[in-house]
Length: 206
Image (tube, rainbow, N blue to C red; front, side, top):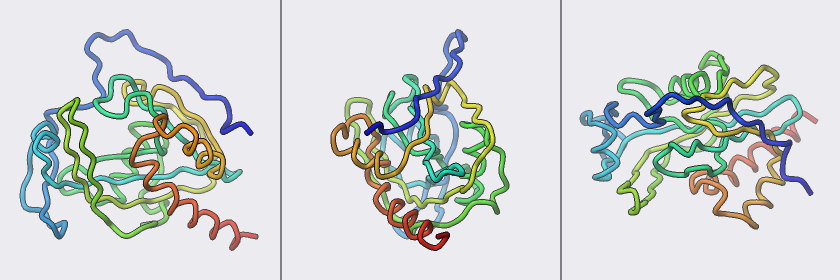
């Protein structure tokens, strides 16, 4: 069984020094209860394991297939791994839903109002990832949203996205079992809850 439609590669750029991650941008840092207690640079947040906020967004087309992106080789972690539609850090003062809407526009060229997103799909929870080979300890309070019935164009940012494709969730899960290292750790962790919620939605539609 094929896992997905054929990947669509992003147009490449020859711009020297193009980077996917801005190490100088600032994040809100939060305490153990997800309350904002200050701000710090991305580089320091990820080097020291300070808690901060991020959001995931799952985009489904009119056929119920999930849009996945393959991360750029210029990313610090998860290089060339398949990921959920968008994973985005919150900017200072931004809500989770606002960040999801912004990430869709910046990474995939999908322009939708934050109010068009459904969710949160799961309770906000702490996700931790330690990647010592690149000096990253990532501690994020995350939640998820979804965009349904997307029929527009995808215009992916080549600094962020290497390729993209649509796939059925059961096929994604089966392929994850066979090739886990081809998918990001957070996608593998979140897909099961989203699959259950997606199946429930499909039953309601029927």
